[in-house]
Image (cartoon, rainbow, N blue to C red; front, side):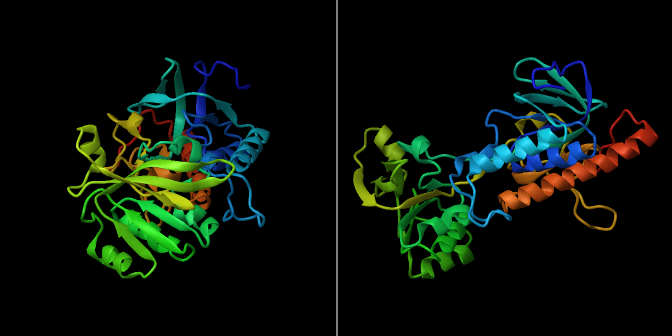
Length: 347
């Protein structure tokens, strides 16, 4: 099937929602199993890795590789084995009967016997001036991914929760100074994480402060930032209300957002697929207690950041993508024997 082929008339063995590392890994494995998977690329084809200029911690690339190049290589590999790609965003999923039905934003409908959800999680943005231009060029949402690029730099971490403390502590291994910028005068982080950050000699705090603008270019990277402060906190709100705020420009070599991620699972609202309060998918262990990618709805599998609020690494996403394809293959073999049309929903 070519990319231009009408997909509405076919019942696909496997549809993969998402084309980041998890979705591509699932596509490679499913295609090699002759399942002819259809991959929906979504509104951000390639996922968050396309925002990373250099990937140095992905196994097999000792000199590093560009994020976009890694994604394109994965797509080419999946196509080679028979995966089909199409642009489309899922608005709604109907999982009460098999084949499952996916309604796309353009009105098309797809049918699938098995569904792999690899739609990822989107980083929350501050809305600072120039962030769109500088993401991947000194502005990052992942210290583990990009911290080593900032040896000897002064960097900012935006946030006040456990994620921000973890990012700051990791960055302190490389940067000269790490400044945590928080819009209030107290942290949301757990006391143990807050204490670790406060006690670290390389970590400083700017209270009642927010990031207003980033300075620099794609050629130079991030070179500085404008911060706004107000003694009562929430300075951007104060500025919008016309209340006076103080502004200061600081020289920094990197800025890290640590204000959370939002899993892209809204299209599963109204289904029986279990999600936590933030929207991350729950996966289930097998009968022996070992992890799988199975959700509580038979035939629906989860891979990558959509089910992983903890690690959020390309290598772990690729691993769970392959697991999801193997789980789906085993499920489809079982389905052929039982010919069940009503998916079981497990408690």
